[in-house]
Image (cartoon, rainbow, N blue to C red; front, top):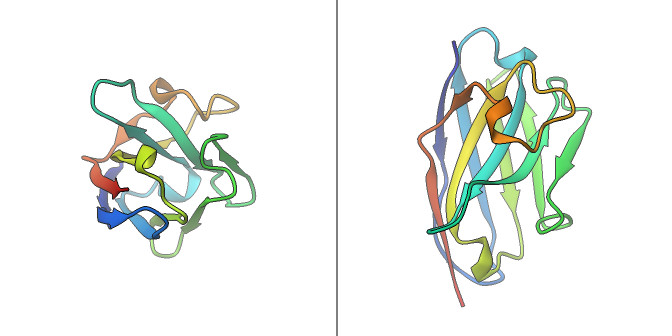
Length: 125
């Protein structure tokens, strides 16, 4: 069992930066693939970024590549999402997710077993 709590969201202007954190409890964190997803009003939840259990492999949606960076600290049971050069279209609720059997399907929400409650990110133009 893994419990996830996101933090770090807020209201910022376009071009600004935010760092989201996801604190995890449970012994399986260090062996889990961690992902960030987002959901804007009226839209489906979409993949943002994922990181392997060791941190050696990272994956990004094309829309955030070069602007967002995912990282993890297994000693602190925390995964981060550094978001730079934010755009109004990045506005969404951001969710942290954990899964042990994700494989190459890191971009599919249903592959993740555990989810946080979400944190709102609003980017004004």
